[in-house]
Image: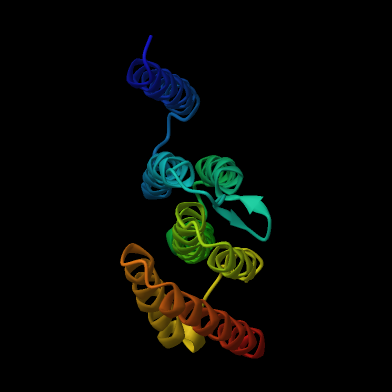
Length: 233
């Protein structure tokens, strides 16, 4: 069974669970409550809406991401279950006490829904923000590793012992530099990339002296970059 089939079975299984729960709830509601005023139908509508909102929340909670969707450490999926339970309990109470004010029933059930929606929106926004930060960091690390690999490959390709030592020192400088960048060092990062390409051309043309000089320039650039980065944090 492939991954798609397993996912389809999981979705179908979860859907069946919701259908069964909603069906049993409807059976109980329409069996128990023979009198059905406007308050009853209002409460029933909020119950049905709670199921829809909870399903959507579960889908958004488990959307592929490196960060859990949570509110103050509590997963949104758990909050959605609490909300569904609260909506059913509050709705059932108003079905029992149908003589209550329609306005009161509307306000209280709207507040329950609104509270959950606010929590859900905050959780999703926080998740997306953190997710973006993580993705940016991954890009920074990938770019940093790319430069390091280029320099290490150059070091392996050269025959001159002095240039190889210079490239090794440069690779060590790059290796132990903070890979996470920011706007404060964006300019020098671009200069470093251009200079690494220049170093590669020097090595290809066997311009040892120029390559040694470029290694020194890159060392200084990384020192400047690291200082600026440390100050900006």
